[in-house]
Figure 1 (tube, rainbow, N blue to C red):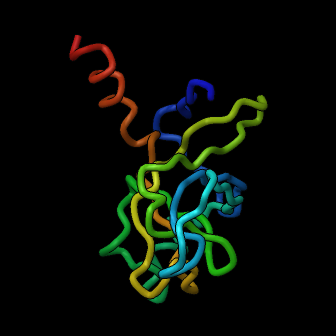
Figure 2 (cartoon, rainbow, N blue to C red; figure 1 turned 135 degrees about the vertical axis):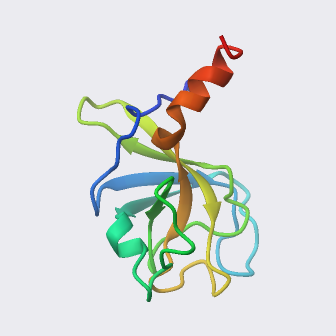
Length: 134
């Protein structure tokens, strides 16, 4: 276990950027829970795609969120709170997302990637809370 590095404030990853979700969520929709921590490589789905009406849509997705994964690999129930780690150009891993929700249609529903809170949208708040408001 290592300290999680945060990405630069306001950073937004490009469509298809490879990231890794770690979690204890169900292995399939309605399936069993794993005996050990799971990992899945999830490519980023950019805001333009994720907010399309036949995807999640603009009402569900805000610019403080990041979408990743898709029909082949996705988060599932129980993964909430888990990190979406992405490797920066300098080789460091950064926590770009915190798993938030998946589709009620199923964990691997087409055009319904896993949705994460975008950490870089909250860097000011994280810094303020981390210093006790000083």
